[in-house]
Length: 311
View 1: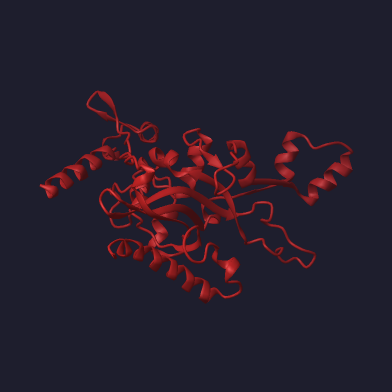
View 2: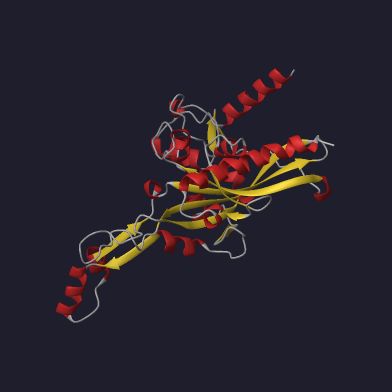
């Protein structure tokens, strides 16, 4: 019976994303309808929008034990490459996780966006745009202002202004915050994703060089661009398909892959148990020991469920 139900769900999911280019009357119409989660069936237009499976309600008294952890997902790892893949072709429209989140914020589809991992300071789309785009006047522009004795015109600004923008290739790290907990009702260990953060290069440091002509120190460092309260992003991510090099018609979504934890990550901070806080703060200057501490915290999480059965 479970196998039949599973097969049915796969067919339903596949139907939702079967906006086939084979039936398109024009590329423009096809792209527009796909972007709006619509498709043509005969003479009718139907919605293909997916509603993510809602999280069940968890009463505080049902949480027997819990631990909040922060992890970093390195997009250079081979297993994480689907999260990083970015294209806007005709047959497939896979975008990187960063691009999906950024576009949804700019379009107002994701509104719970914050400056910090504790979700206390909200930031607007304009704030985020200022973080990912930086414009600076070139030396030639400075000379032009001195030469003409007045500010540059709009046309001159386009010519003499250097624009640095954070794009997918500049976002190589994703942070996530989540809680591992034991549900008293069924005695199972569960995971709930709470927040997600894109880390990219600081655009104000891009292309900047010192007197020696070398890039400034910290030019390649990554900063937190924005934190998103994950439940607010689920609808967008449930309608965004992850790139699959083995099957371009795959319908695995970002919400699926994140909730199922189909990625490689390293814990860099924990809020419960031994070694609270940021690992690099209490184990400084030792990358190997920091990695071992991350593994120890993972082991501690696995032991939480085993300890429940010890009397």
